[in-house]
Length: 444
Image 1 (cartoon, rainbow, N blue to C red):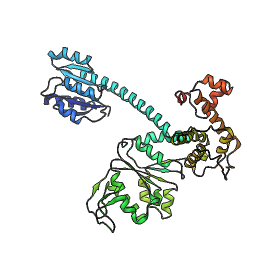
Image 2: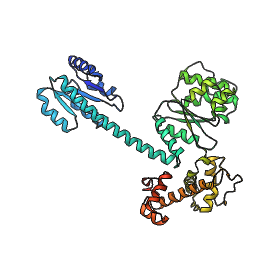
Image 3: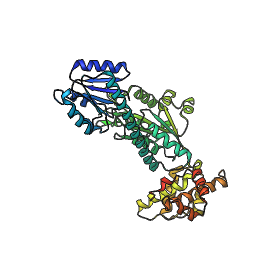
Image 4: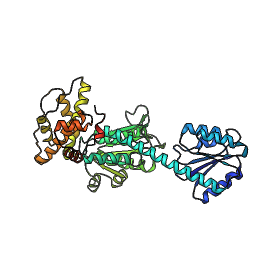
């Protein structure tokens, strides 16, 4: 909260008076009688201001200031001083204190100093947030490649959803990158240092499903030797990714719903409840509500999982990303295989753009690896007749622009000379294809 104030003073009368003044003025006040308690209970990333007496038993205000600056050098600290401590307080301001007030001070003086300090704190935190978002966008741009509008929207949605404690459903065709999106939701959120546990619901035999999810105690069933931690328990504190969730048996759906509602589970063969804190990211190809209406999925679980929904466009609907993805996959394959990536010629790219890509990004990655292995041009039986010549030309044009910008590391003059385009035409084309010069300044 940006109206939060922590007051540290060993005199109960001063704490009481300050709390009354500030509460009447709309501040959220937290009181401490000693500096040590303040440090122990200071919230992480505290968004407010600390007001502290200078002279207190044990740790004094100056020592507290030093400790707080180590935690956050931009945290505003206002010192309360006696008359003889004014020179000391002035020196403390040189060392980073925001302000000092000499006792006895008026409520108006304290409120004025606090409001100015909170305004500064708000600016600092907003500046940090913008820097963090810029860093996050740069990282996500490197993970989720593409310039299409759908990919740009997806990246923004991930930035918005990653820090929130909500379950997410990802919908997309086979091979469209659902697990990569789930990983991004985990890696760019507050659970990043906890486990990311992936489970493909279609790959587990029904008779083993419950043990896989919940774990078991020794002797819980025939063949259950020793204790085993299930996926739900292993994901405690982190993220559980349930791929092909529509394949989960109905009996296990009911038990999963109970875990999500109660935030606790029981291993097979045990009556002990184990608390779990996890975020579920589920992935599906069909609409779960359609599956529920058909009696194949629990409607209540569908709603529980779909607090937020992300939809991944099939590759055929974002052809402007094909060349960029193909080159990235070819480069990765070349590094892994110890080979050089062959160049992508115009006819080869046209061949790629004409394909329907039923296997989506996964199929494209396999095709790029075959290209690096020198296994010849890909042979496609399903040329996409729905893709107009204009659309294919647009995708090819975007690739040519991107390649030139990459080669010249965003040097617009060099790109103009190579492509022999007027500046205005290049600007219009870059804008239409979502290409920004800054993205190519450090291109490899």
